[in-house]
Amino acid sequence: MDEDPTKRKNPFKRILIKLSGEALAGEGEYGIDGERISSLAKEILEIHKQNIEIAIVIGGGNIFRGVKGVETGIDRATADYMGMLATIMNGLALQAACEKVGLFTRVQSAIEINSIAEPYIRRRAVRHLEKMRVVIFAGGTGNPYFTTDTTASLRAVEVGCDVILKATKVDGVYTSDPKKDKSAKRYLQISFSESIKNRLKVMDQTALSLCMENDMPIIVFDIFKKGNLKDLIEGKKIGTLISNSEEVEIEGE
Image 1 (tube, rainbow, N blue to C red):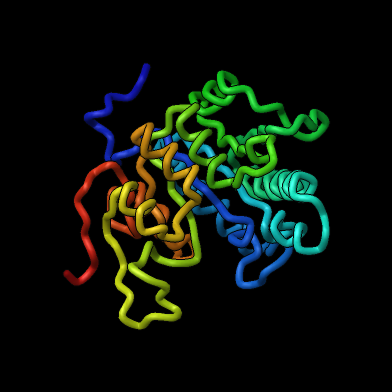
Image 2 (image 1 turned 60 degrees about the vertical axis):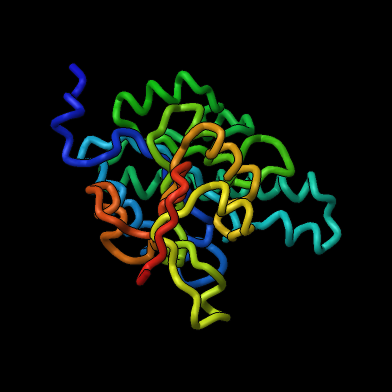
């Protein structure tokens, strides 16, 4: 029997977490940090205990980044496919860490690699989520020229998520680069249209447009601050909310 939504303690039932490959590398730039991925798995377990259905899209920048491949002379399509393979490696690593803490998981890949991951099938993914399995989407969209941000937007819409939680190394979206501009202020809330118009470095334009058209809110937050993920799920105002609401709210104003 489905849970009565009016009795839920949190605002979300099904979420998609967008993890960059760098989130698995911890403080380093490359590779997979064992302590970091273990910590992530424990945080995912914490919110899973609150009966949250969890999907994850993971990047591969800690292993191989398509843009860097192009700079070395590899053609763009080939470099992007190499990046997709890197996301599968990260997906398997995250699966292992999650299962070690007792979570049931499935890795679904947009690139068929049946000996280690399921092919991406929307109805199967939804069924896994309904059974409270954590579903890790790897392999990008399966096509070159698309980012994992676009993959996150696409999968979130396809499987009916309530929100995309974009996990980053910063605590939200700023009016300008806070590393270069000391006067930069954090948006608490901003619209998709403003994000696209001002070319804020949140997600690529394709991803933002897809979310805007399908009314899929995004919350950008700092995954490296312990407890942030749990606080978000419990409805606390963390990071920056991007939605179709035209209301703009800036911290301190």
